[in-house]
Image 1: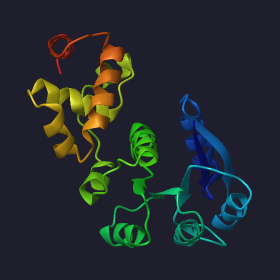
Image 2 (image 1 turned 90 degrees about the vertical axis):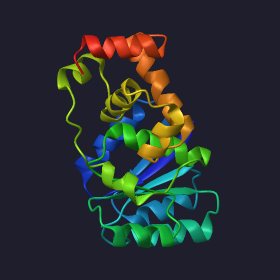
Image 3 (image 1 turned 180 degrees about the vertical axis):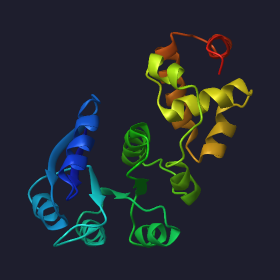
Image 4 (image 1 turned 90 degrees about the horizontal axis):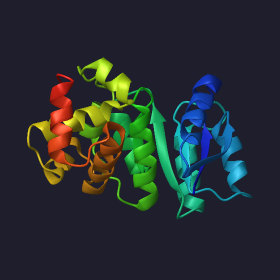
Length: 208
């Protein structure tokens, strides 16, 4: 179980994130806070594995959270949530030892996989990956809706159709090979296929 603490002063957004994460069997949101100071006070007496922090908060912002966590909890992972895909902000967070940087309008699937990657120590820090989080894929929406596919999963299906192997897909999307393999397993389960050929045939049937 990955224990997560979240700090964000936008209550609706924070509750939305909490709800999304709580749907996953291996993720547990231990508490949600309105500012960085409340979160840091909580960490003094409670153990968590991953902190999700907004950058812009009253009393103590996300940069303050980063400093506090990295100075006092060497094993604690910190993922920054940001509205801005600005490289200057990204670089400052990485300089302060952020373990990952996620845009607030990224696909929920991207956040969930990033949490797992960071927890397992296999997340690849790359600004190009951050920029792609906000891109809306021009894919067949009915296909996604019917099979409950995420934007990332649909993107991977297109690459598989093009004959690209897991290792190359990982490089193209700035993800780890293990993450691609996990995505493929989930795709197979959702589409109820057991091989690449069946997957490609299913995609052709749906005209994507």
